[in-house]
Length: 152
Image (cartoon, rainbow, N blue to C red):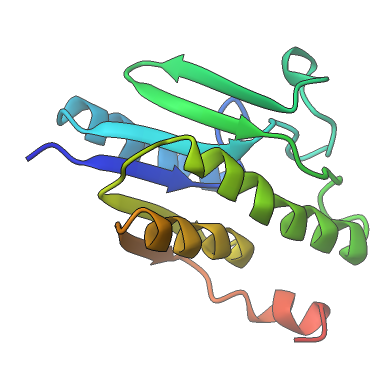
């Protein structure tokens, strides 16, 4: 049975790092298995917090890549590890951006999200509810230091 799967992630190629390195192989394998795969993400800006030149000035984008669709939505960007408040604003602003991007994916069977960052789980939970889809939450790190930093 071919499924319609949405990945919700704040960082995705062409950005580099642990998060895209974990998710991209999942996307590739699911597409190879015949599934319809979409990604809800932001405009590439990691780790400097500056939107990559080819994405600057765009509020929303749809990209078709190697058999899957990327729905990108602009949100507040901040350099990594410079200010806890700007980083928090970055994470929180991704919630409505990812929700908006994910709604463009249409009918879904599964919504997949990985943590960290924990904030990506919020739009994933809402999208799974709105689309009557199963939610897969992949927890890679419980992030206790981050919660303490923000006074949680």
